[in-house]
Amino acid sequence: MKSQKNQPLVSILVPCYNHQKYIKTCLESLKNQDYGRIELIIIDDGSTDSSYEIIKTWSINNKNYFENLSHKKTINNGITKTLSTLVNESNGEYIAFCASDDKLDKASITSRLKGFTSDNTAAVFGKAKLINGEDKILSDDAAKKLYGANFKNKSGEQVVKELFFRWSLVGPVTMYRRSAIMKAGGIDTRYIAEDRSLFLRIIKQGDYSYIDEHVAEYRIHNKSITRNISGRLIIPKDIATLHVEQQFKFTGIRHLHLKSNRIDLTLMCKIENGNYLCLIPLLLFRVTRKLLVALYLKTSK
Image 1 (cartoon, rainbow, N blue to C red):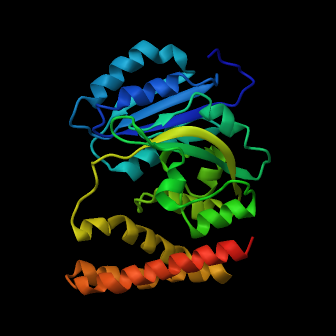
Image 2 (cartoon, rainbow, N blue to C red):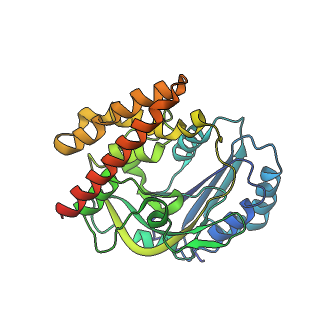
Image 3 (tube, rainbow, N blue to C red):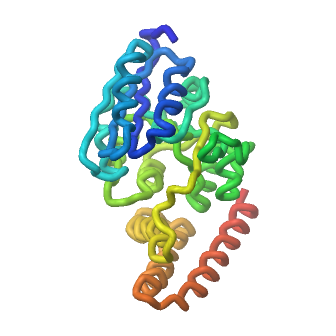
């Protein structure tokens, strides 16, 4: 689309690692955006397949579709450090992330930009379809399918409350003001759940807004972190550690909700040390908390 200089510049940031099967489809979805001023920055995080060769060839053939297009390959630094580098190298007033195996809908940027209705709006997110490794649509609403989330007819504090107590943002659905990310301290490279960390810091200074429109396709496939018990605890333990760290920055029920993760951490550490019987109280505790959260959200509208 032809660039309109009066439009704000939007940076689309793409981290890539071993996604030779999907990277071209991802990039094509970015090229096909109906928005004019896009900066595309791609970092290949040390892929061992042909991902970067595909990126280089595609970039040569499609650089004229973007106001700025850059790419590079680094050693394998991990996703959070790669995201931090992408943010620091971006120039856009707004930032959208898209993993190299996901896709953005044609009006994704335009739709989300319209959601920034006030200076206090720090981030805007929409819906994503859930797809598998072969592009088959598994659900029309990835957040609802994976996490039971429901944002319809919710706005303002209701949206923040839903996200705080029932985290459900999937991959590429969120667009941020770059200034909000930087004011919050940037990407926290200590945590795998960097988007959760960013959320907990951003809501101290701005709002998250929801638009009831499809903006992306979020892919799930068989390349999980690991299949053993300790491996399955990596992300839950990461989030629990983050929550415990952040607990004193909130008060009331939000403080108590984050503080409760100390129990998760204690039980998960015992499981990692071979006490697998602790799986039972861990599951019971997490189910109980989930039910209490659902009750709270239902009665505090």
